[in-house]
Image (cartoon, rainbow, N blue to C red; front, side, top):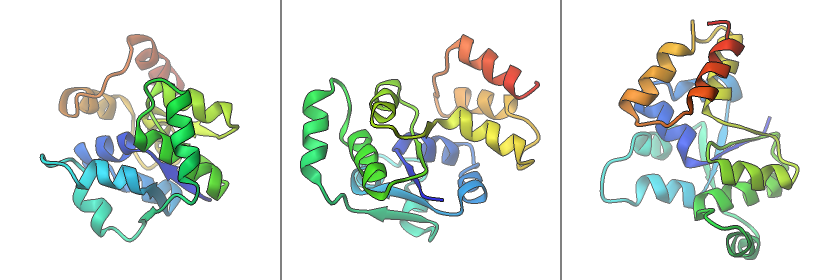
Length: 164
């Protein structure tokens, strides 16, 4: 299974010490250079920065067609470089899944026919695979420790989906 990730799922899972869920669910995760740079080439420490540099199951890959990234950014308002590269890399690799939380990026990815899930979907899958006992405690941790934003409607929907 080919899985490409944007920054948010990695940094947020790392912030609550649950990054290994990605390895347990998907074996390998591929990130584009821009995502790597968003985590590593910044002034302040970012959760997951050490992990993307050291864990062998997180691989960084360069985009082949950078022109497509430029076109995507120019045609889509408010889509950042990491999101654009993640979408283009997922297209280039014919990825089975793209991990992305940002609504605008998800909409663009879906318009290209990509299968997309976010952090909440990862947590639901982890629970279904019996990797975690529940999602509520982890979502609450994400909100309090990682400043993760989730609407009350999505929060309720996820807990219902998880039978919690």
